[in-house]
Image 1 (cartoon, rainbow, N blue to C red):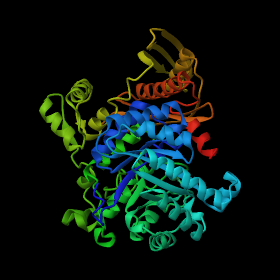
Image 2 (image 1 turned 45 degrees about the vertical axis):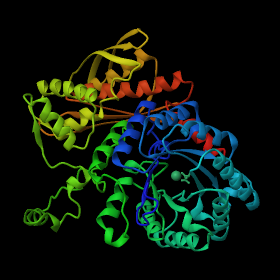
Image 3 (image 1 turned 90 degrees about the horizontal axis):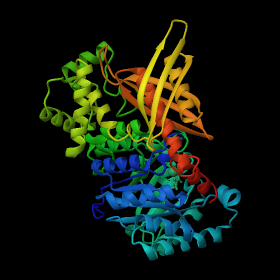
Length: 527
Ligand code: KIV
Ligand code: ZN
């Protein structure tokens, strides 16, 4: 990490911690590992892999990432207490470069209502937490939670105490998305002016998007001297989300003259990474999303099209290829060979090892038998679903479904469990998809409340593949699943089965959700 380059902004990705706390964005340990690998390829400087004290599952995921992902610093979150700090340390200590991130709320609202601690106690607890963490690990980050609503003098005092106790990164969170660009610039300028030893510390910014200003506030903090930005892929995170990684990176890059800084992100890998996280979390990228939305580079009006034909820069401030969005539509067909396929996968920004490439290529050939033409979207969908579709424990053996006009539908579903059981059910419903969902509920014994079922095409043509997104509620939590095939009923059924599998895995590990997010929230609420 180039700590000596004063104009380098470090990208700290918290998709796997703050992002995963977003409703319905839970990920299995394998999915987290896949995202962590993609983040390393993207070039992030720090991966916040999770909150190890939240649950055994969280600890294991953070530990697996620390052991297997090389390149970025791997960081674990902890409250200022021995148990959390020990767990964070044991989870990350095998990383090439481990970091412990300790946090404690500092605002009057949190002091009085949540922590019931006086200012002196806050300072003492923060110092003890940082010292303890520093006795285990060299790289310590400290966050005064709800910093943006903390009295500036007290914030400065806490930050000074944390720096003196050994924190080398001071993160200033706008926990509730309340600050404004001007206000945050002044906060950072104030801290850098008044904290002794500020020159030796990396100041970091962490913004939430409750008022839609997370990216703007983070950029302002950079102008105020922050040299680490905490952000998430697709901006996922608590409530309205966090600062979006792809947006801040492209803002810094596109307006380099204004901000005078740079990052080490491989921007052409942004889109594939965003698609991967979207497909794993089942949270679609909105069409009009800045930088990566389907419409971000589409020009509809005649005047714009005319300008674009003359010169792309008339209406485009970034090139699609800079963010990994390909303009090529028709790509490959049934007769395309492995070599051409490998090249296309690479051009789309994916790095696959030989075994992965073989698996995707097999699926590509199978799809090419059913579909006349294959588009970039099809290949992306095949790569995205590489690890996510066959995880089990329930597998779809057979699906037969049909419908009559008037909405009546019927389905016959045969499922096989990893433990060898075979479950077969028939059901009727309001259309074939509804009938199949009922049959799956009967077969698995897991009853959920369906919140939404959406289908969108991932490519073009009458035989385009349909991506189904299913959102359900179970045990007071939101769960999402997604799947892509050329048959939309089958897509829906596979997406539904993915949700059922997440729930079943969560039940097996004795938690209310598959990822321990329940525990994480309860733990955070108890701080
Ligand atoms: O939003 C926040 O304050 C956080 C801290 C734990 C850094 O996520
Ligand atoms: Zn946060």
